[in-house]
Image 1 (cartoon, rainbow over the protein chains, first blue to last red):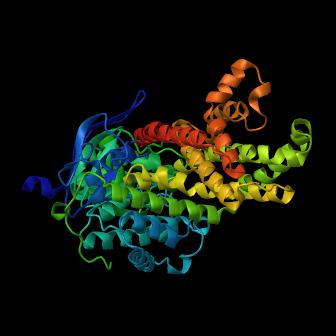
Image 2 (spheres, helix red, strand yellow):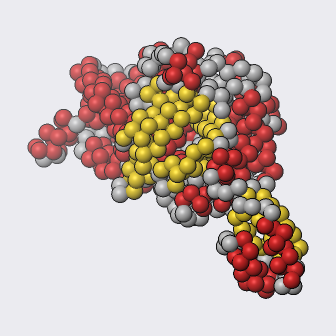
Length: 336
Length: 271
Protein backbone atom coordinates (compact mmCIF):
# COMPACT_ATOMS: atom_id res chain seq x y z
CA UNK A 1 0.00 0.00 0.00
CA UNK A 2 1.45 3.37 -0.92
CA UNK A 3 1.25 6.61 0.94
CA UNK A 4 -1.50 8.24 -1.13
CA UNK A 5 -3.79 5.32 -0.36
CA UNK A 6 -3.51 5.72 3.35
CA UNK A 7 -3.93 9.48 3.62
CA UNK A 8 -7.46 9.32 2.28
CA UNK A 9 -10.09 7.61 4.35
CA UNK A 10 -12.54 7.80 1.48
CA UNK A 11 -11.92 8.24 -2.23
CA UNK A 12 -15.01 8.16 -4.40
CA UNK A 13 -14.80 8.74 -8.12
CA UNK A 14 -17.84 9.15 -10.31
CA UNK A 15 -20.17 7.04 -8.19
CA UNK A 16 -23.48 6.37 -9.93
CA UNK A 17 -26.55 4.51 -8.72
CA UNK A 18 -29.75 4.34 -10.70
CA UNK A 19 -33.09 3.12 -9.41
CA UNK A 20 -35.25 2.65 -12.49
CA UNK A 21 -35.40 5.99 -14.25
CA UNK A 22 -34.17 7.87 -11.20
CA UNK A 23 -30.44 8.57 -11.08
CA UNK A 24 -30.26 8.76 -7.30
CA UNK A 25 -26.50 9.30 -7.35
CA UNK A 26 -25.20 10.80 -10.55
CA UNK A 27 -21.42 10.94 -10.51
CA UNK A 28 -20.33 11.77 -6.97
CA UNK A 29 -16.64 12.47 -6.29
CA UNK A 30 -15.45 12.70 -2.70
CA UNK A 31 -12.08 12.90 -0.97
CA UNK A 32 -12.15 12.56 2.79
CA UNK A 33 -8.87 12.92 4.67
CA UNK A 34 -8.24 10.52 7.54
CA UNK A 35 -8.96 11.95 10.98
CA UNK A 36 -11.44 14.58 9.85
CA UNK A 37 -15.17 15.06 9.99
CA UNK A 38 -16.68 15.38 6.58
CA UNK A 39 -20.20 16.63 6.16
CA UNK A 40 -22.41 15.67 3.25
CA UNK A 41 -25.15 18.21 3.17
CA UNK A 42 -28.28 18.02 1.11
CA UNK A 43 -32.05 17.92 1.21
CA UNK A 44 -34.14 14.75 1.35
CA UNK A 45 -33.66 12.68 -1.76
CA UNK A 46 -30.40 14.33 -2.79
CA UNK A 47 -28.62 10.96 -2.80
CA UNK A 48 -26.86 11.11 0.56
CA UNK A 49 -28.01 7.75 1.91
CA UNK A 50 -27.44 6.03 -1.42
CA UNK A 51 -23.88 7.37 -1.54
CA UNK A 52 -23.18 6.09 1.98
CA UNK A 53 -24.75 2.72 1.17
CA UNK A 54 -22.37 2.29 -1.76
CA UNK A 55 -19.33 3.29 0.28
CA UNK A 56 -20.40 0.97 3.09
CA UNK A 57 -20.76 -2.01 0.67
CA UNK A 58 -24.52 -2.16 1.19
CA UNK A 59 -25.24 -1.21 -2.41
CA UNK A 60 -23.25 -2.01 -5.52
CA UNK A 61 -22.43 1.11 -7.56
CA UNK A 62 -23.65 1.08 -11.18
CA UNK A 63 -20.56 3.04 -12.20
CA UNK A 64 -17.55 4.68 -10.62
CA UNK A 65 -15.26 3.48 -7.86
CA UNK A 66 -15.11 3.86 -4.13
CA UNK A 67 -12.09 3.17 -1.93
CA UNK A 68 -11.93 3.07 1.84
CA UNK A 69 -8.36 3.50 3.11
CA UNK A 70 -7.28 2.39 -0.35
CA UNK A 71 -9.51 -0.73 -0.47
CA UNK A 72 -12.01 -1.00 -3.27
CA UNK A 73 -15.59 -1.33 -2.00
CA UNK A 74 -16.59 -3.74 -4.75
CA UNK A 75 -13.46 -5.90 -4.98
CA UNK A 76 -12.59 -6.06 -1.29
CA UNK A 77 -15.91 -5.63 0.50
CA UNK A 78 -14.99 -7.83 3.43
CA UNK A 79 -11.90 -5.72 4.14
CA UNK A 80 -13.89 -2.52 3.86
CA UNK A 81 -16.43 -3.88 6.34
CA UNK A 82 -13.62 -4.37 8.86
CA UNK A 83 -12.73 -0.70 8.58
CA UNK A 84 -16.11 0.93 8.91
CA UNK A 85 -18.95 1.42 11.32
CA UNK A 86 -22.34 2.35 9.93
CA UNK A 87 -25.07 4.12 11.84
CA UNK A 88 -28.15 4.29 9.71
CA UNK A 89 -30.81 6.91 9.47
CA UNK A 90 -33.25 4.55 11.12
CA UNK A 91 -31.68 2.84 14.06
CA UNK A 92 -30.23 -0.45 12.91
CA UNK A 93 -30.48 -2.35 16.15
CA UNK A 94 -32.67 -5.29 17.01
CA UNK A 95 -35.99 -4.12 18.43
CA UNK A 96 -36.83 -7.43 20.06
CA UNK A 97 -33.60 -7.55 22.05
CA UNK A 98 -32.48 -5.46 25.01
CA UNK A 99 -29.67 -2.93 24.71
CA UNK A 100 -27.17 -5.28 26.35
CA UNK A 101 -28.23 -8.20 24.18
CA UNK A 102 -27.81 -6.10 21.07
CA UNK A 103 -24.30 -5.04 21.97
CA UNK A 104 -23.30 -8.54 23.07
CA UNK A 105 -24.63 -9.99 19.82
CA UNK A 106 -22.73 -7.51 17.67
CA UNK A 107 -19.58 -8.01 19.77
CA UNK A 108 -19.84 -11.77 19.36
CA UNK A 109 -20.31 -11.38 15.62
CA UNK A 110 -17.19 -9.24 15.54
CA UNK A 111 -15.20 -12.05 17.09
CA UNK A 112 -15.12 -11.10 20.77
CA UNK A 113 -15.26 -13.88 23.34
CA UNK A 114 -18.26 -14.33 25.62
CA UNK A 115 -16.82 -12.53 28.64
CA UNK A 116 -15.13 -9.91 26.52
CA UNK A 117 -18.39 -9.20 24.68
CA UNK A 118 -20.23 -8.69 27.99
CA UNK A 119 -17.51 -6.36 29.25
CA UNK A 120 -17.51 -4.36 26.02
CA UNK A 121 -21.30 -4.05 26.09
CA UNK A 122 -21.27 -2.79 29.68
CA UNK A 123 -18.47 -0.36 28.87
CA UNK A 124 -20.27 1.12 25.87
CA UNK A 125 -23.60 1.36 27.69
CA UNK A 126 -21.85 3.25 30.49
CA UNK A 127 -20.17 5.55 28.01
CA UNK A 128 -23.42 6.35 26.23
CA UNK A 129 -25.42 6.78 29.43
CA UNK A 130 -27.64 3.77 28.79
CA UNK A 131 -26.71 1.61 31.78
CA UNK A 132 -30.03 2.19 33.52
CA UNK A 133 -31.96 1.09 30.47
CA UNK A 134 -29.65 -1.79 29.59
CA UNK A 135 -32.11 -4.56 30.33
CA UNK A 136 -35.26 -2.88 29.10
CA UNK A 137 -36.69 -3.95 25.75
CA UNK A 138 -35.85 -1.49 22.99
CA UNK A 139 -39.51 -0.82 22.30
CA UNK A 140 -39.51 1.44 25.35
CA UNK A 141 -36.50 3.43 24.17
CA UNK A 142 -36.82 7.04 23.07
CA UNK A 143 -35.51 8.12 19.69
CA UNK A 144 -32.39 9.61 21.21
CA UNK A 145 -31.60 6.50 23.26
CA UNK A 146 -32.00 4.34 20.19
CA UNK A 147 -29.60 6.50 18.20
CA UNK A 148 -27.07 6.38 21.00
CA UNK A 149 -27.31 2.61 21.16
CA UNK A 150 -26.99 2.50 17.40
CA UNK A 151 -23.84 4.58 17.53
CA UNK A 152 -22.48 2.47 20.39
CA UNK A 153 -22.99 -0.64 18.27
CA UNK A 154 -20.99 0.96 15.47
CA UNK A 155 -18.05 1.55 17.81
CA UNK A 156 -17.54 -1.99 19.11
CA UNK A 157 -14.74 -2.79 16.69
CA UNK A 158 -13.32 0.75 17.00
CA UNK A 159 -13.46 1.25 13.25
CA UNK A 160 -11.22 4.00 11.84
CA UNK A 161 -14.08 5.26 9.66
CA UNK A 162 -17.63 5.84 10.80
CA UNK A 163 -20.59 6.66 8.61
CA UNK A 164 -23.31 8.59 10.37
CA UNK A 165 -26.40 8.90 8.25
CA UNK A 166 -28.47 11.80 9.55
CA UNK A 167 -27.58 11.09 13.17
CA UNK A 168 -29.91 13.72 14.57
CA UNK A 169 -32.89 13.69 12.22
CA UNK A 170 -36.04 13.67 14.28
CA UNK A 171 -34.31 14.34 17.60
CA UNK A 172 -35.29 17.17 19.90
CA UNK A 173 -32.75 20.01 20.29
CA UNK A 174 -31.42 18.81 23.65
CA UNK A 175 -30.84 15.26 22.47
CA UNK A 176 -29.30 16.63 19.33
CA UNK A 177 -26.78 18.64 21.33
CA UNK A 178 -25.88 15.46 23.25
CA UNK A 179 -25.38 13.63 19.98
CA UNK A 180 -23.10 16.40 18.74
CA UNK A 181 -20.98 16.08 21.89
CA UNK A 182 -20.72 12.36 21.34
CA UNK A 183 -19.62 12.86 17.74
CA UNK A 184 -17.00 15.41 18.78
CA UNK A 185 -15.57 13.04 21.39
CA UNK A 186 -15.49 10.33 18.78
CA UNK A 187 -13.39 12.43 16.46
CA UNK A 188 -10.99 13.39 19.22
CA UNK A 189 -10.22 9.68 19.63
CA UNK A 190 -8.90 9.53 16.09
CA UNK A 191 -11.83 8.31 14.00
CA UNK A 192 -12.72 9.68 10.62
CA UNK A 193 -16.39 10.53 10.39
CA UNK A 194 -18.54 10.96 7.33
CA UNK A 195 -21.74 12.58 8.37
CA UNK A 196 -24.79 13.29 6.28
CA UNK A 197 -27.25 15.87 7.34
CA UNK A 198 -30.02 18.07 6.08
CA UNK A 199 -29.42 20.50 8.91
CA UNK A 200 -27.17 23.21 7.70
CA UNK A 201 -26.05 24.26 11.15
CA UNK A 202 -25.09 20.70 11.96
CA UNK A 203 -22.59 20.55 9.11
CA UNK A 204 -21.38 24.02 10.09
CA UNK A 205 -20.86 22.96 13.72
CA UNK A 206 -19.26 19.58 13.22
CA UNK A 207 -17.64 19.22 9.85
CA UNK A 208 -14.13 20.20 8.82
CA UNK A 209 -15.15 20.07 5.18
CA UNK A 210 -18.54 19.97 3.58
CA UNK A 211 -19.85 18.68 0.29
CA UNK A 212 -23.16 20.14 -0.76
CA UNK A 213 -25.00 17.47 -2.66
CA UNK A 214 -28.05 18.09 -4.79
CA UNK A 215 -29.88 15.79 -7.19
CA UNK A 216 -27.18 13.14 -7.00
CA UNK A 217 -24.27 15.47 -7.68
CA UNK A 218 -21.78 17.41 -5.60
CA UNK A 219 -22.79 21.04 -6.11
CA UNK A 220 -19.94 22.51 -4.06
CA UNK A 221 -17.17 21.40 -1.75
CA UNK A 222 -14.99 23.13 0.79
CA UNK A 223 -14.80 24.29 4.39
CA UNK A 224 -17.87 25.95 5.83
CA UNK A 225 -16.16 29.32 5.59
CA UNK A 226 -15.12 28.76 1.99
CA UNK A 227 -18.64 27.84 1.05
CA UNK A 228 -20.02 30.87 2.79
CA UNK A 229 -17.42 33.13 1.21
CA UNK A 230 -18.38 31.89 -2.22
CA UNK A 231 -21.77 33.47 -1.74
CA UNK A 232 -20.79 36.94 -0.61
CA UNK A 233 -18.91 38.46 2.28
CA UNK A 234 -21.80 39.15 4.59
CA UNK A 235 -25.47 39.87 4.78
CA UNK A 236 -27.46 42.63 6.35
CA UNK A 237 -30.47 41.73 8.42
CA UNK A 238 -33.14 44.17 9.43
CA UNK A 239 -36.27 43.77 11.50
CA UNK A 240 -38.91 46.43 11.04
CA UNK A 241 -41.08 47.85 13.77
CA UNK A 242 -44.02 48.04 11.38
CA UNK A 243 -44.25 45.05 9.00
CA UNK A 244 -46.33 47.15 6.58
CA UNK A 245 -43.23 49.30 5.87
CA UNK A 246 -41.68 46.27 4.22
CA UNK A 247 -42.25 47.45 0.67
CA UNK A 248 -40.86 50.92 1.32
CA UNK A 249 -37.82 49.52 3.11
CA UNK A 250 -37.15 47.13 0.27
CA UNK A 251 -37.28 50.00 -2.21
CA UNK A 252 -34.89 52.06 -0.08
CA UNK A 253 -32.37 49.20 0.10
CA UNK A 254 -32.53 48.72 -3.64
CA UNK A 255 -31.94 52.45 -4.16
CA UNK A 256 -29.08 52.84 -1.69
CA UNK A 257 -27.25 49.49 -1.78
CA UNK A 258 -28.24 48.48 -5.29
CA UNK A 259 -29.29 44.96 -4.24
CA UNK A 260 -32.58 43.15 -3.79
CA UNK A 261 -33.53 42.35 -0.23
CA UNK A 262 -35.47 39.19 0.48
CA UNK A 263 -38.33 39.50 2.90
CA UNK A 264 -39.83 37.11 5.38
CA UNK A 265 -43.14 38.85 5.98
CA UNK A 266 -44.29 37.02 9.09
CA UNK A 267 -41.71 38.80 11.23
CA UNK A 268 -41.14 41.91 9.13
CA UNK A 269 -37.58 40.77 8.47
CA UNK A 270 -35.34 41.69 5.55
CA UNK A 271 -32.08 40.07 4.46
CA UNK A 272 -29.81 41.68 1.89
CA UNK A 273 -26.38 40.66 0.60
CA UNK A 274 -23.81 43.31 1.38
CA UNK A 275 -20.45 44.08 -0.18
CA UNK A 276 -19.56 47.34 1.52
CA UNK A 277 -20.39 47.81 5.21
CA UNK A 278 -19.85 51.59 4.95
CA UNK A 279 -22.94 52.02 2.86
CA UNK A 280 -25.14 50.90 5.74
CA UNK A 281 -24.86 54.33 7.31
CA UNK A 282 -26.44 55.88 4.24
CA UNK A 283 -29.17 53.29 4.29
CA UNK A 284 -29.96 53.97 7.95
CA UNK A 285 -30.23 57.70 7.28
CA UNK A 286 -32.50 57.06 4.32
CA UNK A 287 -34.71 54.83 6.43
CA UNK A 288 -34.97 57.39 9.24
CA UNK A 289 -35.89 60.10 6.78
CA UNK A 290 -38.62 57.88 5.37
CA UNK A 291 -39.97 57.30 8.90
CA UNK A 292 -39.26 53.56 8.85
CA UNK A 293 -38.32 52.34 12.32
CA UNK A 294 -36.12 49.35 13.05
CA UNK A 295 -36.24 47.02 16.03
CA UNK A 296 -33.18 45.02 15.11
CA UNK A 297 -30.14 45.38 12.89
CA UNK A 298 -27.30 42.94 12.32
CA UNK A 299 -24.55 42.14 9.87
CA UNK A 300 -23.90 38.44 9.54
CA UNK A 301 -21.90 36.01 7.56
CA UNK A 302 -24.22 34.18 5.23
CA UNK A 303 -25.81 31.03 6.61
CA UNK A 304 -25.44 27.75 4.81
CA UNK A 305 -29.11 28.08 3.95
CA UNK A 306 -28.20 30.99 1.74
CA UNK A 307 -25.20 29.07 0.43
CA UNK A 308 -27.43 26.24 -0.57
CA UNK A 309 -29.87 28.55 -2.27
CA UNK A 310 -27.14 30.27 -4.23
CA UNK A 311 -25.32 27.11 -5.23
CA UNK A 312 -28.24 25.09 -6.41
CA UNK A 313 -30.48 27.85 -7.64
CA UNK A 314 -33.33 26.49 -5.57
CA UNK A 315 -34.13 26.33 -1.91
CA UNK A 316 -33.95 23.33 0.35
CA UNK A 317 -36.98 21.53 -0.93
CA UNK A 318 -38.55 18.43 0.46
CA UNK A 319 -39.19 16.02 -2.36
CA UNK A 320 -39.55 12.44 -1.27
CA UNK A 321 -37.60 9.84 -3.14
CA UNK A 322 -36.73 6.28 -2.22
CA UNK A 323 -33.40 7.53 -0.98
CA UNK A 324 -34.33 9.35 2.14
CA UNK A 325 -37.98 8.54 1.96
CA UNK A 326 -40.16 7.32 4.81
CA UNK A 327 -42.26 9.86 6.50
CA UNK A 328 -39.87 11.30 9.03
CA UNK A 329 -41.36 14.67 9.87
CA UNK A 330 -39.48 17.36 7.98
CA UNK A 331 -38.05 19.45 10.73
CA UNK A 332 -36.86 22.81 9.64
CA UNK A 333 -33.14 23.23 9.99
CA UNK A 334 -33.47 24.99 13.32
CA UNK A 335 -30.50 27.26 13.51
CA UNK A 336 -28.53 27.29 16.70
CA UNK B 1 -14.14 8.29 25.29
CA UNK B 2 -12.40 5.33 26.77
CA UNK B 3 -11.39 4.42 23.24
CA UNK B 4 -8.39 6.65 23.35
CA UNK B 5 -6.68 5.58 20.19
CA UNK B 6 -8.06 4.12 17.02
CA UNK B 7 -5.74 1.95 15.00
CA UNK B 8 -5.43 3.69 11.62
CA UNK B 9 -6.93 1.89 8.64
CA UNK B 10 -3.60 1.43 6.92
CA UNK B 11 -2.04 -0.35 9.88
CA UNK B 12 -4.57 -3.13 10.26
CA UNK B 13 -4.08 -6.70 9.15
CA UNK B 14 -7.08 -7.51 7.00
CA UNK B 15 -8.39 -10.43 4.99
CA UNK B 16 -10.98 -10.33 2.25
CA UNK B 17 -12.40 -13.79 2.90
CA UNK B 18 -14.23 -15.47 5.74
CA UNK B 19 -12.90 -18.76 7.09
CA UNK B 20 -15.14 -21.77 7.64
CA UNK B 21 -14.56 -21.51 11.38
CA UNK B 22 -15.73 -17.91 11.41
CA UNK B 23 -18.75 -18.84 9.28
CA UNK B 24 -19.79 -21.43 11.86
CA UNK B 25 -19.16 -19.03 14.77
CA UNK B 26 -21.12 -16.22 13.09
CA UNK B 27 -24.01 -18.58 12.32
CA UNK B 28 -24.12 -19.77 15.92
CA UNK B 29 -24.15 -16.15 17.15
CA UNK B 30 -27.05 -15.45 14.82
CA UNK B 31 -28.81 -18.60 16.05
CA UNK B 32 -28.39 -17.24 19.58
CA UNK B 33 -30.15 -14.09 18.41
CA UNK B 34 -32.96 -16.25 17.02
CA UNK B 35 -33.34 -18.00 20.37
CA UNK B 36 -33.45 -14.68 22.22
CA UNK B 37 -36.17 -13.56 19.84
CA UNK B 38 -38.21 -16.67 20.55
CA UNK B 39 -37.75 -16.05 24.28
CA UNK B 40 -38.88 -12.44 23.88
CA UNK B 41 -41.87 -13.13 21.69
CA UNK B 42 -43.28 -16.43 22.91
CA UNK B 43 -46.56 -15.65 21.14
CA UNK B 44 -44.77 -16.65 17.95
CA UNK B 45 -44.84 -20.20 19.25
CA UNK B 46 -48.61 -20.49 18.99
CA UNK B 47 -48.40 -22.35 15.71
CA UNK B 48 -45.95 -24.94 17.03
CA UNK B 49 -47.81 -25.49 20.28
CA UNK B 50 -51.50 -25.49 19.39
CA UNK B 51 -51.33 -26.85 15.87
CA UNK B 52 -49.71 -30.21 16.71
CA UNK B 53 -52.20 -30.87 19.47
CA UNK B 54 -55.18 -29.77 17.40
CA UNK B 55 -54.17 -31.61 14.24
CA UNK B 56 -53.34 -34.81 16.04
CA UNK B 57 -56.65 -34.88 17.91
CA UNK B 58 -58.74 -33.74 14.99
CA UNK B 59 -57.41 -35.95 12.24
CA UNK B 60 -57.16 -39.04 14.41
CA UNK B 61 -60.80 -38.90 15.40
CA UNK B 62 -62.04 -37.78 11.96
CA UNK B 63 -60.15 -40.31 9.84
CA UNK B 64 -59.33 -42.99 12.38
CA UNK B 65 -62.64 -44.84 12.36
CA UNK B 66 -63.09 -44.70 8.60
CA UNK B 67 -59.56 -45.73 7.68
CA UNK B 68 -58.43 -48.13 10.41
CA UNK B 69 -61.66 -49.16 12.11
CA UNK B 70 -60.99 -47.13 15.23
CA UNK B 71 -58.88 -44.18 16.28
CA UNK B 72 -56.42 -46.15 18.36
CA UNK B 73 -55.42 -48.53 15.57
CA UNK B 74 -54.97 -45.55 13.25
CA UNK B 75 -52.50 -43.83 15.54
CA UNK B 76 -49.32 -45.86 14.86
CA UNK B 77 -49.86 -45.31 11.14
CA UNK B 78 -51.04 -41.75 11.34
CA UNK B 79 -48.93 -40.14 14.04
CA UNK B 80 -45.65 -40.09 12.05
CA UNK B 81 -47.67 -38.72 9.12
CA UNK B 82 -49.16 -35.84 11.07
CA UNK B 83 -45.76 -35.22 12.64
CA UNK B 84 -44.18 -34.69 9.24
CA UNK B 85 -47.08 -32.52 8.08
CA UNK B 86 -46.97 -30.36 11.20
CA UNK B 87 -43.23 -29.84 11.31
CA UNK B 88 -42.96 -29.06 7.60
CA UNK B 89 -45.82 -26.57 7.87
CA UNK B 90 -43.88 -24.96 10.69
CA UNK B 91 -40.85 -24.59 8.45
CA UNK B 92 -42.91 -22.31 6.18
CA UNK B 93 -43.09 -19.85 9.03
CA UNK B 94 -39.30 -19.66 8.90
CA UNK B 95 -39.52 -18.03 5.47
CA UNK B 96 -42.26 -15.67 6.55
CA UNK B 97 -40.40 -14.56 9.65
CA UNK B 98 -37.18 -14.17 7.72
CA UNK B 99 -38.94 -11.79 5.35
CA UNK B 100 -40.31 -9.74 8.26
CA UNK B 101 -36.91 -9.77 9.91
CA UNK B 102 -35.09 -8.63 6.79
CA UNK B 103 -37.33 -5.60 6.48
CA UNK B 104 -35.94 -4.32 9.77
CA UNK B 105 -33.06 -1.92 9.98
CA UNK B 106 -30.91 -4.38 11.89
CA UNK B 107 -30.29 -6.36 8.70
CA UNK B 108 -28.54 -3.31 7.27
CA UNK B 109 -26.12 -3.57 10.12
CA UNK B 110 -25.63 -7.30 9.61
CA UNK B 111 -24.77 -6.57 6.00
CA UNK B 112 -22.26 -3.90 6.96
CA UNK B 113 -20.46 -6.16 9.44
CA UNK B 114 -17.41 -8.20 8.45
CA UNK B 115 -19.22 -11.49 9.01
CA UNK B 116 -19.99 -14.49 6.83
CA UNK B 117 -22.77 -13.55 4.41
CA UNK B 118 -24.63 -16.78 5.06
CA UNK B 119 -24.68 -16.30 8.84
CA UNK B 120 -27.86 -14.22 9.25
CA UNK B 121 -29.76 -16.81 7.18
CA UNK B 122 -28.16 -19.95 8.58
CA UNK B 123 -28.54 -18.63 12.12
CA UNK B 124 -32.23 -17.90 11.71
CA UNK B 125 -32.85 -21.34 10.23
CA UNK B 126 -30.81 -23.01 12.93
CA UNK B 127 -32.76 -21.29 15.71
CA UNK B 128 -35.97 -22.48 14.14
CA UNK B 129 -35.06 -26.11 14.75
CA UNK B 130 -36.14 -25.31 18.32
CA UNK B 131 -39.61 -24.67 16.95
CA UNK B 132 -39.55 -27.99 15.12
CA UNK B 133 -38.42 -29.67 18.32
CA UNK B 134 -41.36 -28.23 20.21
CA UNK B 135 -43.83 -29.26 17.52
CA UNK B 136 -42.35 -32.77 17.42
CA UNK B 137 -42.46 -33.21 21.18
CA UNK B 138 -46.04 -32.01 21.47
CA UNK B 139 -47.21 -34.25 18.65
CA UNK B 140 -45.72 -37.32 20.30
CA UNK B 141 -46.98 -36.34 23.74
CA UNK B 142 -50.50 -35.82 22.41
CA UNK B 143 -50.28 -39.17 20.66
CA UNK B 144 -49.05 -40.83 23.84
CA UNK B 145 -51.93 -39.40 25.84
CA UNK B 146 -54.30 -40.72 23.21
CA UNK B 147 -52.84 -44.19 23.58
CA UNK B 148 -49.99 -44.25 21.08
CA UNK B 149 -47.42 -46.84 22.24
CA UNK B 150 -44.70 -47.15 19.57
CA UNK B 151 -43.05 -50.59 19.30
CA UNK B 152 -39.55 -49.17 18.97
CA UNK B 153 -39.96 -47.30 22.26
CA UNK B 154 -38.39 -44.01 23.19
CA UNK B 155 -35.26 -44.61 21.13
CA UNK B 156 -37.30 -45.05 17.98
CA UNK B 157 -39.32 -41.94 18.68
CA UNK B 158 -36.14 -39.98 19.26
CA UNK B 159 -34.59 -41.22 16.01
CA UNK B 160 -37.76 -40.39 14.07
CA UNK B 161 -37.81 -36.92 15.65
CA UNK B 162 -34.24 -36.20 14.63
CA UNK B 163 -34.87 -37.31 11.04
CA UNK B 164 -38.01 -35.17 10.75
CA UNK B 165 -36.30 -32.11 12.24
CA UNK B 166 -33.32 -32.47 9.92
CA UNK B 167 -35.63 -32.80 6.91
CA UNK B 168 -37.68 -29.79 7.98
CA UNK B 169 -34.52 -27.75 8.42
CA UNK B 170 -33.47 -28.70 4.90
CA UNK B 171 -36.89 -27.81 3.49
CA UNK B 172 -36.88 -24.50 5.34
CA UNK B 173 -34.14 -23.37 2.93
CA UNK B 174 -36.76 -23.48 0.16
CA UNK B 175 -39.07 -21.25 2.15
CA UNK B 176 -36.16 -19.05 3.19
CA UNK B 177 -35.45 -18.58 -0.53
CA UNK B 178 -39.04 -17.45 -1.09
CA UNK B 179 -38.64 -15.27 1.98
CA UNK B 180 -35.62 -13.52 0.51
CA UNK B 181 -37.00 -12.98 -2.98
CA UNK B 182 -40.59 -12.09 -2.04
CA UNK B 183 -41.73 -8.54 -1.53
CA UNK B 184 -43.88 -9.13 1.52
CA UNK B 185 -44.36 -11.66 4.26
CA UNK B 186 -47.89 -12.34 3.02
CA UNK B 187 -46.73 -13.42 -0.42
CA UNK B 188 -44.13 -15.74 1.13
CA UNK B 189 -46.92 -17.56 2.89
CA UNK B 190 -48.92 -17.72 -0.33
CA UNK B 191 -46.16 -19.22 -2.48
CA UNK B 192 -44.98 -21.54 0.27
CA UNK B 193 -48.35 -23.13 0.88
CA UNK B 194 -48.71 -23.65 -2.86
CA UNK B 195 -45.61 -25.84 -2.66
CA UNK B 196 -46.47 -27.34 0.67
CA UNK B 197 -49.98 -28.66 0.07
CA UNK B 198 -49.26 -30.97 -2.87
CA UNK B 199 -46.13 -32.20 -1.13
CA UNK B 200 -47.79 -33.12 2.15
CA UNK B 201 -51.23 -34.22 0.95
CA UNK B 202 -50.07 -36.15 -2.12
CA UNK B 203 -48.10 -38.49 0.10
CA UNK B 204 -48.72 -41.48 2.33
CA UNK B 205 -48.97 -39.27 5.43
CA UNK B 206 -52.72 -39.72 5.98
CA UNK B 207 -53.73 -42.86 4.15
CA UNK B 208 -51.96 -45.81 2.54
CA UNK B 209 -51.38 -45.07 -1.14
CA UNK B 210 -52.76 -48.38 -2.53
CA UNK B 211 -56.30 -47.06 -3.01
CA UNK B 212 -55.13 -44.11 -5.10
CA UNK B 213 -55.16 -44.11 -8.94
CA UNK B 214 -51.94 -45.31 -10.60
CA UNK B 215 -50.66 -41.90 -11.65
CA UNK B 216 -51.13 -40.57 -8.15
CA UNK B 217 -49.43 -43.63 -6.65
CA UNK B 218 -46.53 -42.90 -8.92
CA UNK B 219 -46.26 -39.33 -7.56
CA UNK B 220 -46.71 -40.47 -3.97
CA UNK B 221 -43.93 -42.98 -4.61
CA UNK B 222 -41.41 -40.37 -5.72
CA UNK B 223 -42.55 -37.66 -3.29
CA UNK B 224 -39.72 -37.12 -0.81
CA UNK B 225 -42.29 -36.45 1.89
CA UNK B 226 -43.52 -40.03 1.48
CA UNK B 227 -40.02 -41.32 2.06
CA UNK B 228 -39.75 -39.15 5.12
CA UNK B 229 -43.09 -40.38 6.46
CA UNK B 230 -42.18 -44.01 5.78
CA UNK B 231 -38.84 -43.55 7.47
CA UNK B 232 -40.41 -41.92 10.54
CA UNK B 233 -43.07 -44.61 10.66
CA UNK B 234 -40.51 -47.38 10.39
CA UNK B 235 -38.31 -45.88 13.07
CA UNK B 236 -41.18 -45.67 15.58
CA UNK B 237 -42.43 -49.15 14.69
CA UNK B 238 -39.00 -50.70 14.67
CA UNK B 239 -39.13 -51.95 11.08
CA UNK B 240 -36.24 -51.76 8.65
CA UNK B 241 -36.47 -48.54 6.61
CA UNK B 242 -32.84 -48.06 5.61
CA UNK B 243 -33.80 -47.35 1.99
CA UNK B 244 -36.33 -44.63 2.82
CA UNK B 245 -34.04 -43.18 5.45
CA UNK B 246 -31.26 -42.95 2.90
CA UNK B 247 -33.59 -41.42 0.30
CA UNK B 248 -34.82 -38.86 2.85
CA UNK B 249 -31.38 -37.75 3.96
CA UNK B 250 -30.13 -37.64 0.37
CA UNK B 251 -33.16 -35.54 -0.61
CA UNK B 252 -32.53 -33.21 2.32
CA UNK B 253 -28.88 -32.84 1.34
CA UNK B 254 -29.83 -32.03 -2.26
CA UNK B 255 -32.38 -29.41 -1.18
CA UNK B 256 -29.78 -27.69 1.01
CA UNK B 257 -27.10 -27.94 -1.68
CA UNK B 258 -29.40 -26.27 -4.20
CA UNK B 259 -31.32 -23.78 -2.11
CA UNK B 260 -28.72 -22.59 0.40
CA UNK B 261 -26.46 -21.05 -2.30
CA UNK B 262 -29.49 -19.73 -4.20
CA UNK B 263 -30.85 -18.10 -1.06
CA UNK B 264 -27.52 -16.57 -0.08
CA UNK B 265 -27.06 -15.20 -3.58
CA UNK B 266 -30.52 -13.66 -3.63
CA UNK B 267 -29.86 -12.24 -0.18
CA UNK B 268 -26.57 -10.70 -1.32
CA UNK B 269 -28.17 -9.21 -4.38
CA UNK B 270 -30.79 -7.58 -2.23
CA UNK B 271 -27.98 -6.29 -0.06
